[in-house]
Amino acid sequence: MTLSKIDLLNKRFSRRMFGYSRLEVDQFLLELAEVLGDAAETQKSLKKKVKRLESAVSEYRQRDETLRDTLMSTQKMVDDLKVQASREAQLILDEARTKADATVQKGHNRLAQLHEEIESIKRQRTQFEIQLKGLLQAHMEMLERCDPERDKFEEMESKLKYLKKAE
Image (cartoon, rainbow, N blue to C red; front, side, top):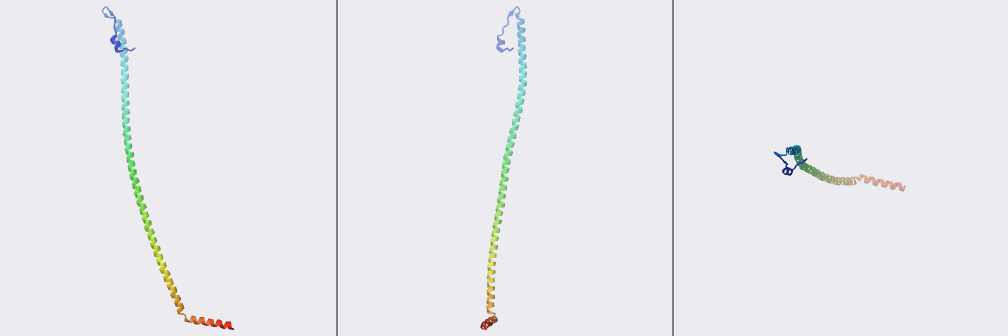
């Protein structure tokens, strides 16, 4: 049974000889006590529920705050890792470029050295050919100039061939 404030204010008891009807007042008080008892239990139950919910809300807020802090920490770590990775990548690229430049420079130096060696060998070959030609020419001239006996021998040989043919 429920009683409202209006029901209480509008309640009228019948009159008897020495005041209100005791039976009606007692019955009304029992009804009122029952309604107030139910309301008190409901209020107590609701207060417990409110405390439980406030505790849960507090716990959820704390979890939310922890999650936010964790998320912010994680985001900061991710950003730091990105920056660090970017720096490391740049260092690796710079080192690779430096090594590549050094390798290319070594290749150019070696190529220049090989060109110089080839030119030196060509000069040596040319000098050798000139010296060899000079030596051969000198020997040829020497052979042609220094062999008067050979001329005599050839002359005798030709005479001998002529005599053999005449026979």
